[in-house]
Length: 223
Image (cartoon, rainbow, N blue to C red):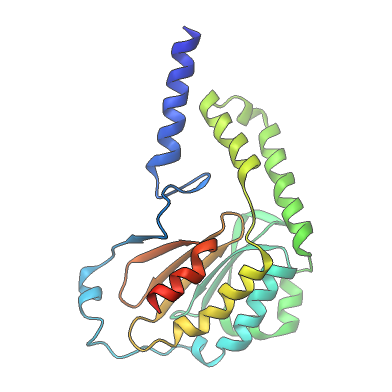
């Protein structure tokens, strides 16, 4: 009976870890990038639509600098940059269950940045994330989860690796380059240092999910 239960738990765990595009442990394929097709009418009309310019385009360089600062030297572990809408979403280790939404033009103001995002060096942020994982594993409700889910949570804590600081800088430095492309320009991008993933949408619609380690190769192939 125990062997039967163990086999069933293993099968369920493997399904959970391989059914999604991105699961608890990262991208479920070794491909350089994952492409998710979107609205075909947007994709097919890309060459006939004029390039859209938003408020972000006028402030992109100082914004890029300050958002890099958030990822490197503040408590922020995830950023979404809406380059068309001017919407910036952030998540912090100091309040990990919430997502804040800010206007892009506000985030080029250093005083605004200091008010909303207290300093936290990168190593301390990584330590905080590890401690949060440890706390979650200690919860009674988690201990009552099925064995296969407890195994997944344990693996998630043991296997996660943050994006290297140098890679964050290179990724953020590429935002302007991707936005200023004439035809296939960037509409939005999200960076999560916990999952080492970059999620991007371009004006041709669809979504691209790229591992941080493969980001430079993605640029060299596509741009």
